[in-house]
Amino acid sequence: MSESALDRTARALDLVPYLLEHQGISIPELAAVFGTSEKQINDDLILIHMCGLPGYTPLELIEMYYEDGYVTVSDPQSLKKPRNMNRAEMTSLLVSLDLLKSTRSDAISEEIEALKLKLKGALAIENPFVVVNNSKGSQLIEGIESAIAHGKALKITYLSGSKDESTERLILPLELYQENEFAYVSAWCQSSEADRTFRLDRVVNLEVVENGAITKKLTNESLKDELASIELNVSKSARTFIEDNRGVIADVVDGGDFRVRLHPIDADWLSRTILGYGSEIEVVEPRELSDDIKARAKAIRALYPKS
Image (cartoon, rainbow, N blue to C red; front, side, top):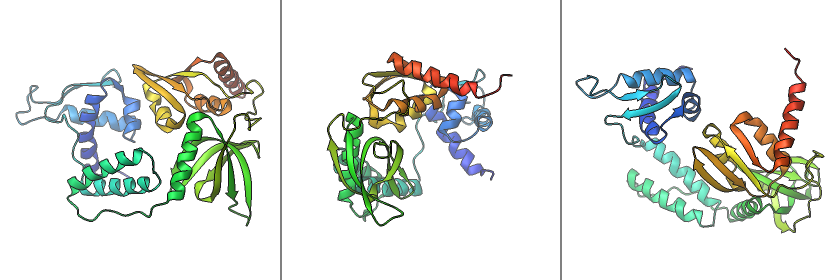
């Protein structure tokens, strides 16, 4: 479905202040950020380049450079600040923040409340949005996040979605995420000896177990143990790796590319994840992780006929 002129105008108004904060960003990365094609971004940049203040001489036009595939803005004219959100956008954010706060009871809930107050002030509304508080869900999320951050295993009691029964599972949680109205945890399941996904509203009980309780986390014979010291070089175009895996990230240093240190984490999962990013993520250490990824890449390449 083709987009409206209003949608394109809104994106153009958002592009200039975003570019001011991300000078030198590549066109493919810019297209990914704004959820459109590279061709559309190029068309938008051409359009913006011809816009400016009344007079429309070179002195009043927005000045930018993008011919080499990287975009910089030297004169944004009057578009230095992001546009204000409309009422629908602010309402959507308020409802989302209310839902997020209902699952949290830790320090981040104070930051969420501060954001809500700012949005309510901008909306000038009296009645707050209400989401039923789920204290049990909040405790589960906190426990799982803590386990991910510290590389701890968990014992959970899990209700089957297809059978009227519950089972005890020993898991190593890797990632928390939300899909539609449900929250999920992706984990290595010792009981099944495989990767599994568990829906949080079916977790009846959760407790942390001692290190070493999970004796086999990997199907790959070359990496038997959890990696303890992990350092990666993540390119700007792969920043989604950082955003999607904050639970396992110990430190991030922005120096052109991102230098990322991870908490101890399942090696098999990490190898598969890095492979998905291709050359955008480089393993600095440990050497065995780098060797494992190279071996996997060669094995995958060998599956394809030589041209």
